[in-house]
Amino acid sequence: MNKPFHFCKFCLMTVNIGEIIKTKALEKNLSQEKLGRLINKTKQNVNDIFKRKSIDTDLLLKLCEVLQYNFFEHYYDEEPLKSMRNEEFETFKKLIGELTKSNEQKDDTITNLNKVINANEQLLNILQEERARYKKETNKKKF
Image (tube, rainbow, N blue to C red):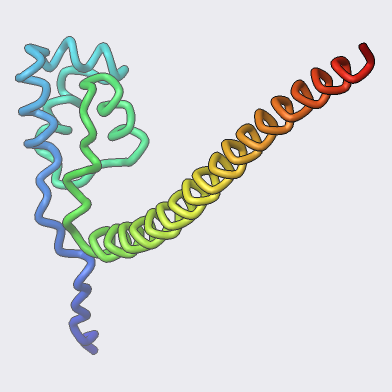
């Protein structure tokens, strides 16, 4: 009995990660042998990696570190990561908007408090002047 064909929209990856890794290794002038030493693999394993369409995430992380390149970014336009990333962006946009509004409110509060401080300083100066005048007048009356 034949099983019905199941189509998975998430299974069609267009990223050829092996080719991308190969390109980045060549840009860094790393031979297969040298790259292999850096990631604890043989030259033949590296050659196999260059031919892969998919790769273990631990190995990809190691390659990111060694080649100083984010290979994961090539998957961000693929589903389901694309949808997840868009949701994250929307969440971040909303959070940034809320934080911006909060900062603007705090800036307004600081501005208003500075106005109060300035008014209090002016009042204090006036009171100090009045006190000095009062002392002066009081001293004149004593003599």
